[in-house]
Length: 239
Image 1 (tube, rainbow, N blue to C red):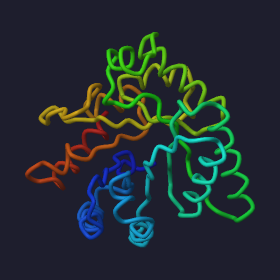
Image 2: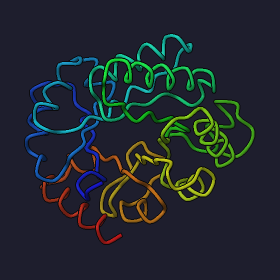
Image 3: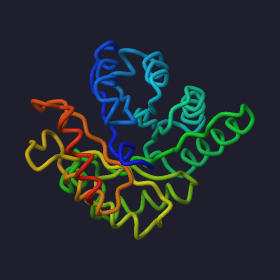
Image 4: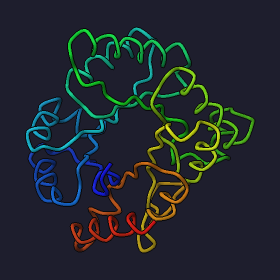
């Protein structure tokens, strides 16, 4: 994994042309771009095809969460799009995750496709301990819940998790070195946290065990976004 591949830029925009403009603009500094709900709903799979034509990789961030058969079919569709990574919600349960993983692996073998990394979302970085307990109804601690879901994803054969960098060291200790940890909610020391509850700087996240960090607004809202990405890559390198 090169230094430029550790930083994933979130294309959290709705305009097809603007998204591709961003890919071109940051192409020298970033190798993986995240396509999430907003962009995928507005632009569809064609934006993924165009990103691939530019020699870049895609993290498809749609957080599949449904019955096992539905998630499995969605995962197969993602694999056929050639994405580098996609994710499901760990809270969908073991059977959902394992069915998705097994069916994607079998399809990729049968159709000679590159197998995407499959990640499980543990607890969204916008959720605090209080929200988890009082609104979601999970009574044990946030750390305990994240640890449990990460272990469940590992048991189901998934490649890793999406989790806050604040839980990265705990997940690494619980799930081992080969387990991927992708951390959103990353903010530089000079940017606001926005709607994120559990944030960390790029250097801190890498030191805590993150394999990839995902950043969007914290880069795009800067006066010189490309320079910011360059600085963050240097920060990752020194971590």
